[in-house]
Image 1 (cartoon, rainbow, N blue to C red):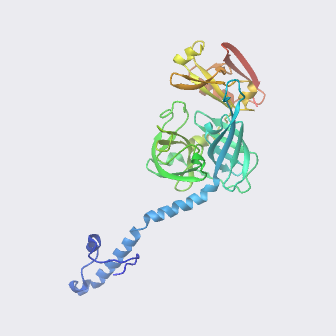
Image 2 (cartoon, rainbow, N blue to C red; image 1 turned 120 degrees about the vertical axis):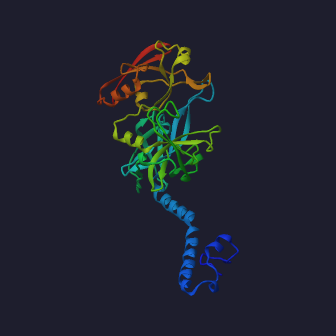
Image 3 (tube, one colour; image 1 turned 90 degrees about the vertical axis):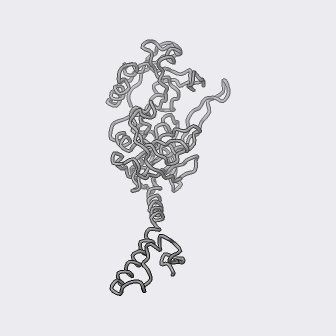
Length: 378
């Protein structure tokens, strides 16, 4: 018998088909003949229909990918690195990340750690168009940042932000980005878990994460995580891996956190730091109560740069921590000590409520001596 699905179908050679197909017509009462033929046709239809769900799902994913891929961008950065030799000149370091266009006027979501201390940022689209960008707002404690392109792209395709609260563990998702520099790469997986703030990484105090088994590598950071409807439900942040490769666990900040960044007034400092407390605070002779932020890097032209903050200049390993030392240690901002309860939240609220021209003061420990730096809010 020739199968309508293609190929040959031999009745009796397959125990499943033998069980489905009726016995020969000679064994069927005349009154049941029509019902039997109908059963055969329905069985064949069911067999054929059951052979294609995986292919249909693949075709559906391909269509969604083609639709949303133009909104995904590569983010190229330049920042100042430490000299390669003692007494040498600082060097320029290139960085690569991913992002997604979310508005026709040129706003791009990415991860904060991709752009936080960048001296220059360039965004490249699928069409090959490249545009300069600046950081509009950044929240390192949630690892999400918003960029503004110097001008709108020529053919903007805007991705839609989805409702991350409606996402369930076990749902299929896909990630698009530039892992290891290979642009517009698709990886597929599931939502493995939903992690509350501080549940995975202590520095991410404001971040709610999706955990995923979709492959994530260096270069994926800042790229979008989509649901199967093509909506952005997360921004790729980091991986937990023994080797640094994609066999580890991937994490993406939820779109809810990203939406809050856009809706609430935020700011970009242009500084990265390491919080010192306990034994490390004693090593750096931080005065009581012994908490300070060791400045690691400062982006050129940023508010931190205009304030006069000094970045570290020497790599050092203290205990198990790799640090850049020699820079300022921030003790207080706007007169609020970093050691106070909920100090970072209070400082964030006060800074975002400043008006242009309002004074901004930061107290630092520089060379063992407290120094107060002053500037005005932009």
